[in-house]
Length: 211
Image 1 (cartoon, rainbow, N blue to C red):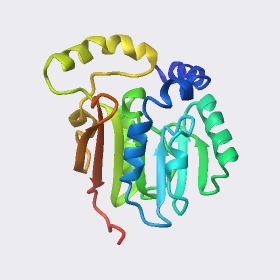
Image 2 (image 1 turned 30 degrees about the horizontal axis):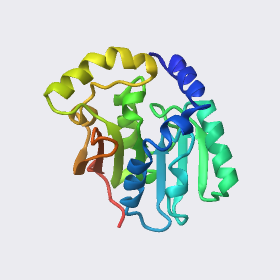
Image 3 (image 1 turned 180 degrees about the vertical axis):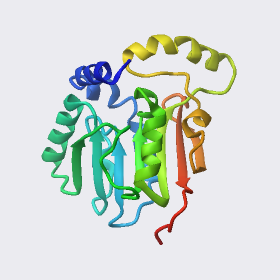
């Protein structure tokens, strides 16, 4: 599915996303943000912010930028920011595979349920590495293929169908990180059903890491 088709799918989802996916994935969102381990004043980029369900979970002393390529999703996120008076949050309409930010802009990047829902995950991951500072962290919360057993076989089998729903089920962690200067510092399976993965990486690209 190309970017234009995917944008239409997710803009359509925006009307029901919170009701359908809000509670289902809330536990994993809370786990992700509870272990963010960020310092006051740090800059955090959330890629694929969607309707902004994670935004109220961030500490107020962080500077949060959220981007999404779906205007429908972003409209819901803007409503949430306004209703909750989240003054530390900035939202921008942007393609995560072609970000307009300068190199080394952010201390932490969060991508929840994004990597398998974009037309080109390689472009998104390359851009994430580019805009996070050396020594900064990238946190992925996502479904990745689970090993090589029966579940993995089913995930591969249904992936051609789920692509029409806006995501894929056949991507592995190793594929997502291949060729990038990222060091995995944590990898655990989380709810629901332990089929989703929380992967934390340190950006090991050359440069001076912040203290």
